[in-house]
Image (tube, rainbow, N blue to C red; front, side, top):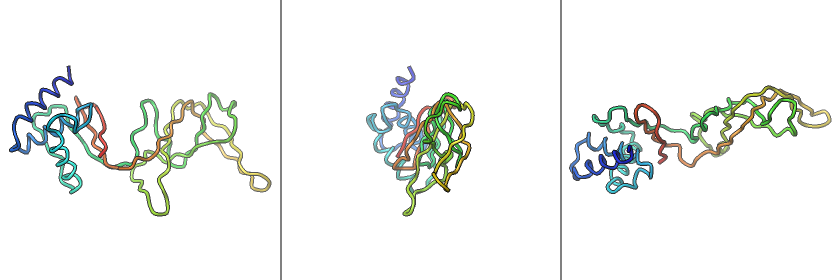
Length: 188
């Protein structure tokens, strides 16, 4: 039902022709971004979406749509997507290991968090690391690394699930909200 409404609204806005008002441009962009098949997949969406990308790259504000109701879009920058549902980002420097209890950990292959990844940028010296998302805290275990005089022990949090997310090639995104709830993220 909702997809039909999007497609009908999109067809109506596309029939307005090339001399669209700023409000029609904003509404067209919002409808195109909401298309589950992709923002440039519907007939007539490629030109306004390409213009949107040029405008945002030139630091112009996101276009408005007075008819949008509880639908809107926000753009931002982060090389990482949000953690999957029910998981949270492991804090910067925090260590984690996967297991069902602190006493049944085998090995010492732990991960170190970077947080949500906000503000992180690759540099010539350092590539971006993986974002770590965790779920189901079950306790703390001690990990020992090194050998001989270089032995080090430290506490590591144990989680039922650990998800590793590699950085994406572009930090630019647009989040589309419908009925004030996040509907989808579009990368550009």
